[in-house]
Amino acid sequence: MSSASAKPPSSARPPQTSPSPNSPQPRTPVLEDAWQRFGDYDKNAVKAQKAFIQQRKWVASLGVASTTAAVLYLVLEVTLGQEGPPLSDFIRSVATGQLRNANEAIMGSMSLLVIFLPILVTILIAASIKFNMGVNWVMLRGSAETLKKEIYRYRTQVDIYAADASEPREIVLARKIKIVGKHVMETQVNQSGLEVYDGELPPPYGAARSRGDDGFSNLTADLYLIYRLEDQFDYYRKKAQRLGRELTQLQWLVYILGGVGTLLAAVGFEVWVAVSSSFAAAFAGFLEFKRVEPNLISCNTAASDLYDLRAWWRALPESARQQQANIEALVNGTEQIIQGENASWVQEMRDALAELYGDQEQVQADQLQRMAEQGTLINVRDNQEIVQQIVVGPVLDPQEEAVEGEEPAEPAIAPDQAQDSIDISNDDDIDISGDIDISGDIDFSEADHGNLSGPDHVVLSEFNDPDQVDLSEFNVDLSDFFDPENDLPKETSEESETQAATDDIDWAKVL
Image (tube, rainbow, N blue to C red; front, side):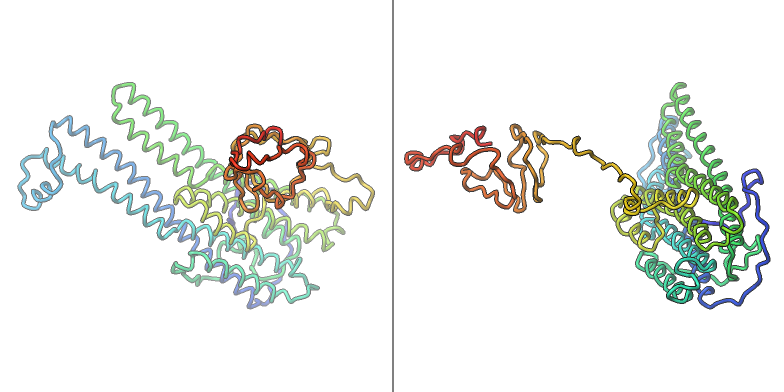
């Protein structure tokens, strides 16, 4: 989710930093490979996006057309006083040129529309589910942004790409390219014919060419600020403005069409309310599956975080800007913010696709897990904590705080506030497979004994004699409840001969 040259109005962008000369350097083969892979993913992501959105537009349009055709058929049937002929008869009449009158032609044509339009909608939906261009779009876009993140970390030589790292940074970048490519090929993307990007490197949406970035030279902190942070800030601002306009327009259309439906019902055209409602549903569905409002919030948040990070860097004295720790804080903080926005977008689109395709569990369990493994999905809360650490200073580890003599954090539940009694009077199943301390009061008065389960799923209702119930596996100490010698009823010979039922035992006294 990035752009290399988007520029919002000047009032929305931060003050620009003048770039220092960026002397060209020889292209390294591994960086060329990284940009090539990025170009492949970016090109196919754009292609899948266009195909997916076009499919959804056709489905919505044909759905509205189907509703309109059905309503119009009913209106014409009443107006002309003639029902549509059977489809086979109408086709035979058209083929032989033996239509009796114009009304028959009109009603026959409407019958065809009423029948075939829903069939076309069904075919389109089945095709969209089969080819699943939406998933391809999201997977490829997320993977492209992950590669872009690694490219900029490589160029700024931070963390695992530092000059004093244990491995050469070229080897590390090559391994990252392999990991991202492997995860992409483990998804359904490998069932698509991926096109190869054959344009100039870096691709148009890779490096900030309009700002003077060649895409291959090593970057100082100030150049990274211009080519990466400020460029992404401009992109988020412009995208937020576009999403804001789109959200307002679509919401107004939904409200207006709702009012039109009310007006039609008031003036006696109730049958046409279905048409206005179908238009409103189409616009609302388009707004929902594109997740316009959540994406707008995400873009505004990312832009604000980037602005704050830039303000922190500009506030540092010149000597502090030369320190490697601060340079890494700038680069890592920027990449975390960008990846956090990308993760939010991926999550929202996953939810939208799950609703469209009706396969929530597989979409989230398989696809999102793969994206998380390759480092695309970063928890937004963690990103905010990282930015906070950069702005206000590092946060000490709890163990380090204890060493320095500070008071430890309060537990989530104070010991004196812990619950000392358990009420299981409802009928829910209770899993007591682990060790449980039941030294407090437990109310079994209304419990359903048939729903108590232990390691072997012992069902108490199946036993007629308490001696048959083996509670040793539950690690439960019953000594606080009763004395087996004195409290249990004594079995007499007469009771043994008659095989007394369980009802003869006073269970209230036992428990």
